[in-house]
Image (cartoon, rainbow, N blue to C red; front, side, top):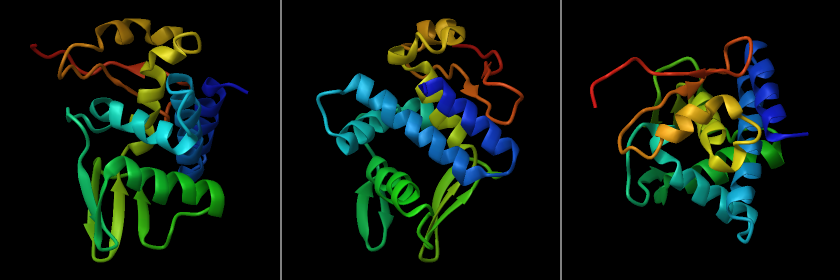
Length: 178
């Protein structure tokens, strides 16, 4: 199996309304990509470092290091929360914790709602975009070559992967002035 196959699985799961399964397939693709990039690091450390490196692709914002999120009475880096409470819980427990909610059909956000952490919006699409745009995966996603070439420009939103479509496809954002 390949990283591309994991994103194909994610697309099929999403189409069938299996959103958490789609997200898990994308997280597996991130784990494999992070090991390609940081093979010398352990799985968790490589995953977190990859997510931190890809903040601009995933969140649409540029951050120097990380940003912290308050959850369960403590402040932690976003990549730690995503690894520990989403990736590990889905992988090892086959479910998200009761106080972590994934709302796939909303605007992109992460927010606390009472004692719950809510991941809203196209998280799976954004995370899949980071996988496809990674230079480590150029052999598996040649269709993203142009987007990869323009990626280093600060603040440039090069597009996202849409898991809802009939195939993995890279969608360019509307033209805008630099």
